[in-house]
Image (cartoon, rainbow, N blue to C red):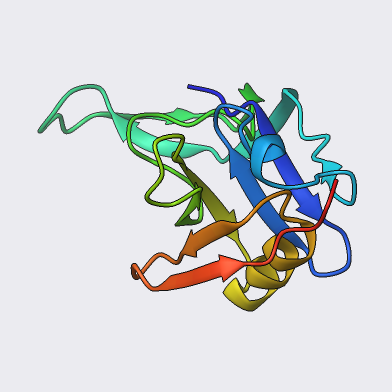
Length: 142
């Protein structure tokens, strides 16, 4: 599965991985830049070696050095390999219209907390990866 958006906070290098594009609901993302990481063709050198024809074979042959080519997609993840550390945002906690979304981030939690505090569109609760709740972060008026 590929992530819809990878946000980068330029001054701190904080990266927020947004799987479904929900960060815009909770925060003003105009101060963030969207990562321009896109699919890239890469090459790697494979060194030559001496290998056996089959298991326990006495005879060997030399495989020459070559260059392998592959596709690299930084937003693509396999299975449960979620990048970074998780955090959860909850708006209108305890009310019928409560919205809960999980994201992941790479960087310092202090930078994430500062970003959420400064850009929240509403009153939100932030839960860190250890489950610590930072309650009633003041939202800014849109």
